Length: 139
Image 1 (tube, rainbow, N blue to C red):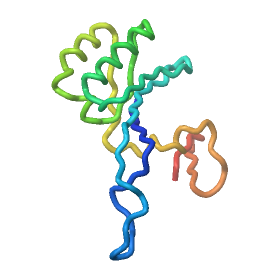
Image 2: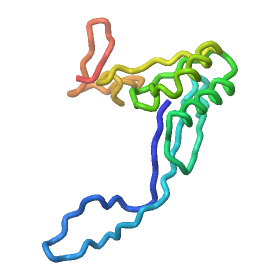
Image 3: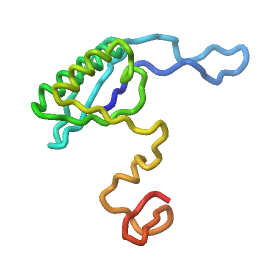
């Protein structure tokens, strides 16, 4: 499960411009589309899209809908974003836990979860290490 924000305007917080010149990108702010998504073990993608700030309350609601949609005990793997652990949703998380939700938090730094670590079979050659038990990892 993760969240992402998308905006249709150019990022313009900083730019290189000659001294005395005007930036060519205008400082327009647009609405931000936020998306929460969870890949379920069946291969289905459960999503929510909204045009407002991602908050702990929205995250809690998403988890409730996800659990209801799956209809059986569920483990959700999360990073350590502050909205995932906010005090304001602890009572809701306790209720969802009673209904079968388990939250698994990744360690703060998880290099073993890099893209190359989850490929089905790595290519041969530099950058890959194969263990004596034929397991593999990113080198």
